[in-house]
Image 1: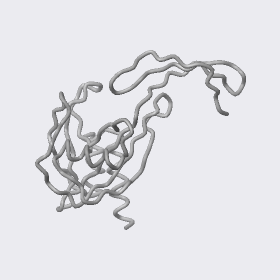
Image 2: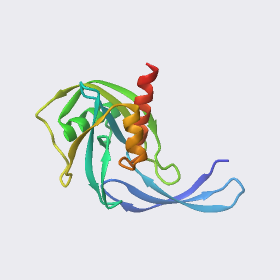
Image 3: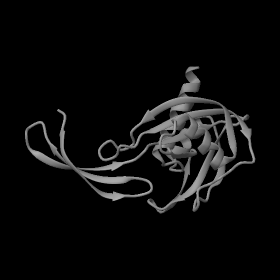
Image 4: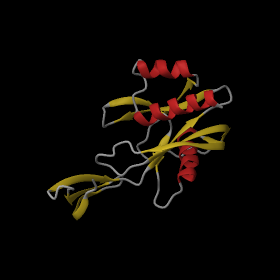
Length: 180
């Protein structure tokens, strides 16, 4: 069932990802090509404030040509621990530092062509800091949404939340709370 890589050729080496084409041998002996995006991975955080609201961000996403409501997230730096990255990204994007950070899940958003893995965390006991350092070209609006299951399902069904990592993070977090 596994494929054997016969050769790899890099076509692009960018700031966010690399693109390579692999020549592979299939289980039936035939050969094929696989286009692979190499990505360091990312984190996403579901931050709850003291009132039970979830702090989200709105930002324009060029790939889909629209403003998207998302949970705070960011790319792992070279050699960075996902938990450290989650703390850093939350503080950079929202100005909040989590006293408590719990892992929720890790998942591959596009296993057919990407190595990216996203680690989702739940953040609580947020401490407001004066530190916010957004990436150059990153324009973010902070939005609070109710941290209740019905409200989140409504936002998703209405199409107000369409981002995959956000849907996964919100749904798992609110359902985990019901089990606790």
